[in-house]
Length: 122
Image (cartoon, rainbow, N blue to C red; front, side, top):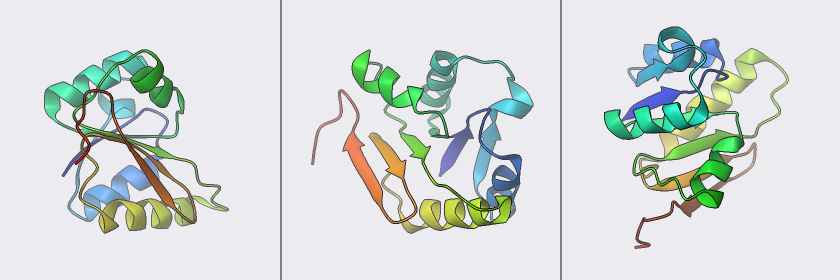
């Protein structure tokens, strides 16, 4: 699975995912300052799933009708430490494989998924 970590996604989590064999590109490292629309366009072009802490991606995808066949995962967790965030992120990302075509919100106790605009419910 290919991921694109938004600029605000913790570097410790990016590194941990990469160490576990996940293909994770990080906007902070290779396109700092890219705006949200540029991040979505890159994700679509590279067939990556965006992982972010920025809730603006939901607004872009739904309110303004910017579909992303790749998928968006918004992390809304209140971790007490960077290590706890990393553990929660890894656990969430490794329990599912159906991220594509969805806007997903990951919270401490649940994962909510909603099809993105233009995606057929199956």
